[in-house]
Length: 132
Image (tube, rainbow, N blue to C red; front, side, top):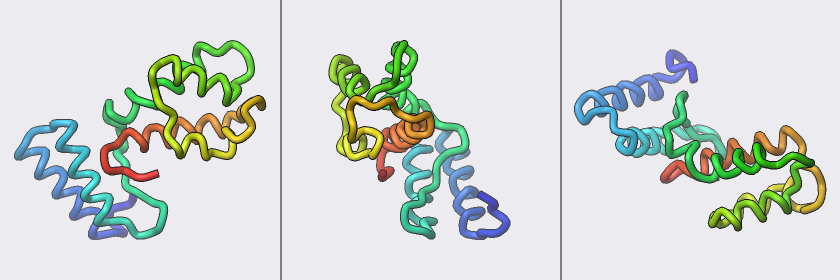
């Protein structure tokens, strides 16, 4: 985001820096403040502010489980196999995942772009307060 074009964004990032300076760079606090900034700066429906460097919360949950399935799967990447992997891993598939177009036909090979979208949305899903 170009903060010179959006004074509110620049101000919000200054607030985040101040909070991190005063309270320390605690991941939980950073995520809370980023979510508050995100809500304040939403200018278009369907957009949200995300960190440039994803915190552990974004890559250690559902996104990590999906990546593990991709790494372990030697054949075509089938939605049915992903759901089986998640179930066996003790991870409940969220409704947004089941509603994804790539997940509708369980026995077709998922496109690379579709798999990227799943990872992206899974990372957003694991941010407290973020919406998909």
